Length: 253
Length: 253
Image 1: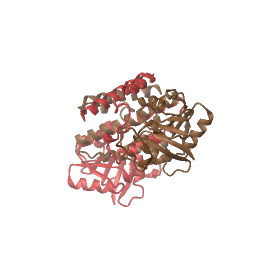
Image 2: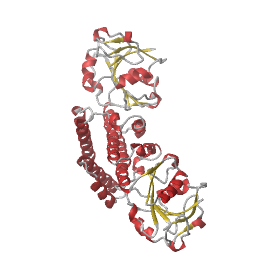
Image 3: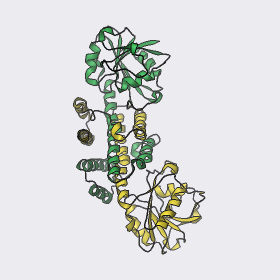
Image 4: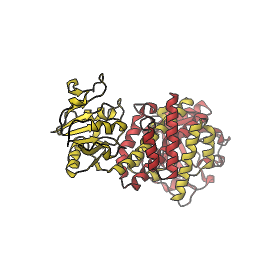
């Protein structure tokens, strides 16, 4: 068994702790929670600590805290030469304190506390300085997922930027769709099959091949009528810039 | 049986003809195809015509042509007082020629010829001038889908604009994600679970609730590091404007 201490109690910590529950390879021996009042669902209270000085010895320390706190948390671990991992898409490996061995265990998914998720299909991006450590991280990852990738800090940054486009920004476009529906007394559910099919298409078509719509056809009449329809300045601006980019991109091909 | 003549041979015609294949309620008696060389997959050649003067008499004419051609096509139908429907998201009902009864049969989905699709979950937006015609269109729609909606021309325009945001623009963000991956030698498949989960979330969470990411957290450090990372001017501009809009939108709530 690989013994792991999890540091953090946010969305990522929450989902990882529950994914490792009753695991045959990995044993979460302790969770560090900063907030004295906070517990972890389905994790025994007696294995929770609020103080770095009470941190147990373990094979691996898995830091699941906000990006800005990773360096400071890693320096407060009261051990040396342990394997310390962070779970962030945007923090380079070398931000971890050098008294311990450094690694990254980045699950590429969007986590909401209120939505359960199966880990088996979630890609875990792994980085380590030493081959042995890479193998150990891979073993931990393979205990919960089928998909592991060797990704260096630069590539991880690229993935994180790409993820902002395909997840955060995409969800914001759903928000705009939702507000247009609400303003016109249309149930948002009417867009659900379109949203799901648009996502599903990428399994069989490249997004370039899947592109449809007025911008792709350079259909200026429809584009102008949509711009006239939109009253929200910010929505109008987003419509313009994305349409222009789709048209320009089409010319390049 | 309701007899239907389909006019057009593009993506929507193609998918509708195949959805109505062997249907118990609707019989497609003829398809009008402008291009002399073009056939329709799984539809007998002898039932295809290339001339409006050869158009058969039927209960319903289903116009599946490009938006700009709808008015002209509807005026070329050599009959009177038939039910003539168009399938467009953005053309008002009254663009159809007045010698026939007017209706709209708008399937709200993204169609690619190379990808088959099940019609059962596709919302069909219905509009008609007369109650009887509405009932007839609803009967045709229910022959292939579980989901029909009464949607007037204004609402349909709103849906079409919303669809551009949640489908066309979303797919373009996938294209940007793909190109960032390619530039950094990362397989695009790594983003697939994230894309699917982002779409699936809307079944259980409102997009407002589902929003995550650096813009939502107003995490200026990460935002600036992403902007420094992006070299493509257009991608940078899209990143900026969507981030600003997410931040401004968060302040309103």
